[in-house]
Image (tube, rainbow, N blue to C red; front, side):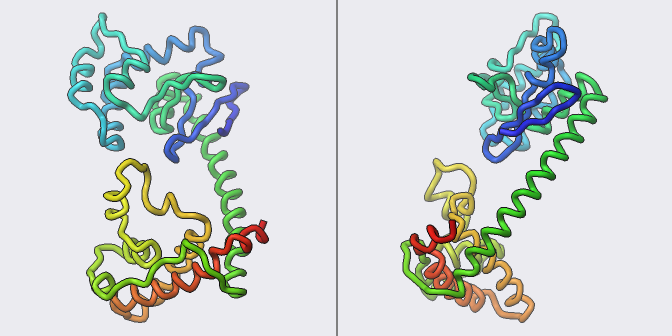
Length: 267
C-alpha cells in the first residue's frame, strides 16, 4: 500500500492485479457528507456510461446486458445505485468496496481521476501531480533494486555452474522448426518450453501471464536472452537457428543461476 497527501488529506493507494487503485473514500473524507458524494456520482448517467466503456475495454467478464439495463435507468429520479450493487450486478473490476482497517471504496486510477474531476478540477490536477510523483519515486527505487539484483546474479553466471530443477529442457527439432508469430514467444519457448498461449491453456485458473510466475533467476536469464536475440536478428540469423541457440544458452545460464545455496549467498 502507498499513500499520497493532498492538502492535508492522506489518500491510500492499493494494488489489485498489478493495477493501481485509489481510495475514493479518502478523497472525500474531509468533505461534509463526502461518502454520499460517491453514490451521487455513481448515479450520474455520464458516470455510468464512462464506467461501462472502461469495463468493456479492460474486463472480459463484464456483464454487459445488466449494464445496459442500468444505463437506461441512470438519471431517473427513482434511480439508486451503490458501489456494492454496481459490482454485484455488472461483475465490475474498476471499482471495488474493501472492508477492514483500510477499507472503503477504491477505483482504478483512470476512474479515480474521473471522480476527482467531478469533485473538483483543482483537486484532480493535484491528485495527478502527486500520483505521478509517487510513481516516479517507485520506479527509481525499483530500478535501483533491479540493477542491484542483476549485478549480483549476473556475476554468478561467470562463476561455478550447478544443477537445479528450473533448468529448461533441450527443445526437439519439430519445436525449433515451428514458425512463431512473435519474438516474445521465441524467448518463452527457449526458456519455458511453451508459448504464452500454451501456458494460458494449461493454467486457465491463473491470472496474468507466464512471465508473472517466473522467479528472479528466470527473469534475469530472460533479460539476457532478449539482448542476445536482438544481436542475432541484426546478424540475419533465421528464426529456427536463433531459437536453438537461445535454448542452449538458457539451459547453460539456468544451470548456473538455479543453485539454492548460491542464492542464499547473494542475500
